[in-house]
Image (cartoon, rainbow, N blue to C red; front, side, top):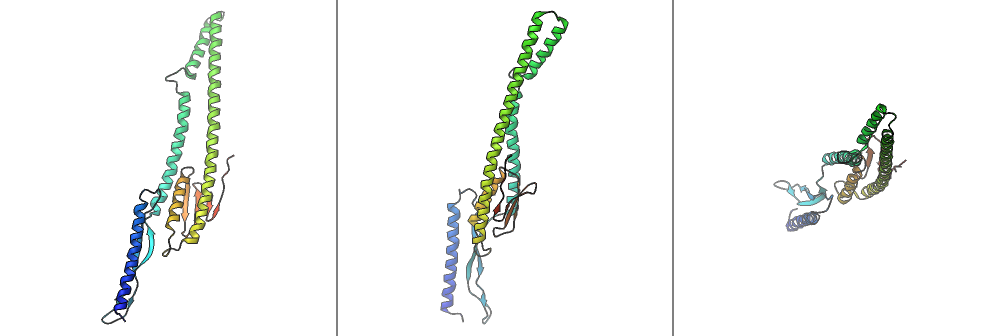
Length: 250
């Protein structure tokens, strides 16, 4: 039966609920500059009703759960576009090195030297007995051979450095995969949808997935409660729930 105690209980429950909301708001303000943090809020729900005259009487409210404002569709789109942007940026950087090697607008390059080499042959064909023409042809041939050797060595060095960068990226990817699998395990232990949402762990995993997309194109299949599968764009599994799979550079 409704009475003064019931009224006090309603007030007490409302205060506890609003206290939780104030705490969550304070946490949002404190993490306003935290990378990857998703804004959170308390979801309220009524505590039910009792039948009475002249009708049902409510029992107040309670803080049902702490939710985070997160759009899965936007996140998947971001991860996909981030992978594409990283791929094109890396290709652009590599092509800049190659362009610098064959950029002959400000220096004497292979094209100009090879043109001179052909001209020397033309001169020699007109005067085959001329010693200076023969010497000029030999010097031109030597210059062409030298620059070809230099550019070949530069390309080999570029290939070696590129392989080393890929090897380092593979190591970083394997570390990220292990961390993501570990977070899946923690999420499975702590996450109770609708009751105890593991918001912080979910934020941490999303940050790692974004970082992973900087190195490799990925697709994400999240079934909730840490049951998350990450695959490459080609369909190869990288993380299956709590199990990470390692990449190898060969």
